[in-house]
Length: 299
Image (cartoon, helix red, strand yellow):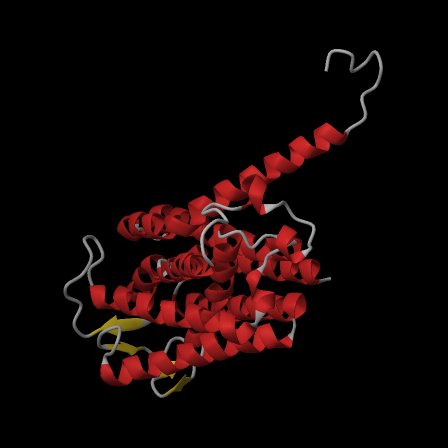
């Protein structure tokens, strides 16, 4: 049930994102709002159905509540992102922040966290699930070392996995006029109009968010299994589709390159890990197939 609902919501979300380059003006703004709401429902709904109310509540508290708080502080003081203002195109505001903005933090925080868990050995074999074991292609960073080292690697991957998304998001939203920076210097090469302080602010808040999520969510957030496939697909879809959209459809080649480089820290190892796990499963399946005399004599 969890996977069917999550796959259905993901399919609707993908369709909405495919339609984005085909729209303009108010229609595009409305589609942006709808996409963010769908993303929030997908991530929070998945957390609730797969791990229960504690994990979902922790995600909402840390990402939605924390996201609103940091945005409100940012709009009022310029800390930690820099000085900026939102336009009125993204719907109702509270304290100068469109209400959908903290939903966007939540939308990508959960798949980024699960990707980091998957990469640091939190596979189904440790949780008693039915996925591939971490020891056979299931972990990128390995399972050795202290629990403190594991925690640091997991937080680092989740932080970069979320914060690097803004290398796609901010240039796209600024190009649409959804928010504007009062002082956009210094900026990354090829990304004028957005100060470097914005990306540093994302890193800061992302590391605080990911550090708080695990203690609040409890041990259920330490493992991944087959139920999380839609979230993994969401993360990889976001990565590869954003590269394509920025490079081809949105005329934002610089953000395509910056985003591809930034999110690759998490996305590429994740894709490689999944391919290795799939090959390991195929190999085990072949090893357990019965040999037929005569037909399989050469095997």
